[in-house]
Image: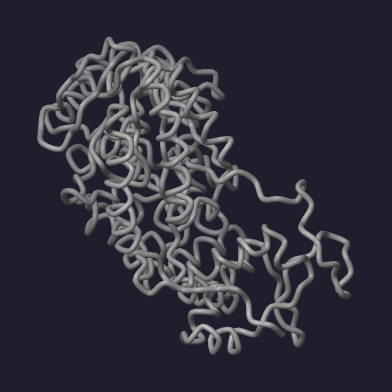
Amino acid sequence: MPALPLRLDRSSRAPLPAQLSAQVRELILAGTLARGSRLPSSRALAADLGVSRTVTELAFEQLVAEGWVEARRGAGTFVASPPGASHGRAEARPPAPAAAPGLVRLDAGTPWVDPRGLAGWRRAWREVSAARPPRGYDDPRGLPELRVALAERLARTRGLSVDPDAIIVTAGTTDALRQLLPELPSGAVGVEDPGYRAAVETVRSFGRAVVDLAAGEPVTSLEGVVAAYVTPAHQHPLGLVMPAPRRLALLAAARSAGAIVVEDDYDSEFRYDVAPVPALASLDRDAVAYIGTAAKSVLPTLRLGWLVPPPSLLDAIVRRREVTHAGAAWPSQRALLALLRDGWIDKTVRAARRVYAERAPRVAEALSPYAQLAGPLAGMYSCWLMPQTTALRVREAALAAGFELNLLSSYARTSGLTGIVLGYGGLSDEELDRALRAIVGALRGSASANGSVNDGGGGTARAVVGDSPGTGTQCSG
């Protein structure tokens, strides 16, 4: 079998397995590797490239997971064939355009996944397969051992000390909200604007009105609402951090109105400029319902999260879950327990934080001459303020280059803020470079046409400086 045209760059920041999988992927897209083609063995390829076999095995595992190649027992590894195709000799022709993969998503919710962590991931699921499942429906709060591990982690990383029995394991953030809403009095719910779109739709699905709370502005009154849904650690999507005075004012407003604060602890683990800010719930357990998720530290598709409701609502939520069998899937809970116990999540978070800390300044350096950053650099995305006409032009340029980019206006209801929300977690370094070239090209063209740059919103930007260091700015156009 002839050697493949592959070259690994040891001076690159990209890990060798990631470089190898990316190059094989490109050969498949170009038609150099036709569907059904047999790849060299991991041992032979490692010898050709002068690397350890671990490098080639990790690259192959990533390609298998993404569906580019398939491993056939006793036969080897082959470029994946279309459904229904035979496993005979394939024709040497490029893949049909309709079979090309979809757009690369530059969204705010897809995390970077360390390919070096695949062994720990497989180990966790082997443990699940060997474990004895519950005989019937399990504890409505969730797997007891998992809740113990979550309580330890919340105390250690979020400054939130809770009894394991006060934690409810959920199927994600919106599921936690669905568990909470039926136990609240009738009435409207305040949600940040711009804010988390899934939360808005979940509130509305219960027939409740949504009251807009201006993101980045102090909340001094919650009269007329029964709850306020906020993302204080890393406001979604602007990226602002709620400073201490505003946290205290929000809690005071909730107590005065008899409302609760729903704290979505979004992206809290991925600060890389300062230590993560403690959870709002650590200041007042009676007034705050705390929501966390494994979507960013593990995978969104694991569909697991946790809810720490105010003590006054805990029993009612548990009783309802017991009647409706609303528990999260046991295999996923068991896998998350293994990942927590083995330190896999801590390692994954640290590795991802380093990647985001390197990518965020690259994005900022490229975009800052043409747009205004809405908040501090943190997490796996950044939000950039610009006129809507420019944002639309940028989105079209990204689309033409093969990338899906979200508009800030899709998160806004009455604020009128416009711009783009650029995620840099769920893609490779090479893909990020290509995306930035397309985006900057469109921004440069808009700046030339308008004769101005960095106005953040049609030339009528208004800056509101945060109350404490690291809170960033908010601009309204």
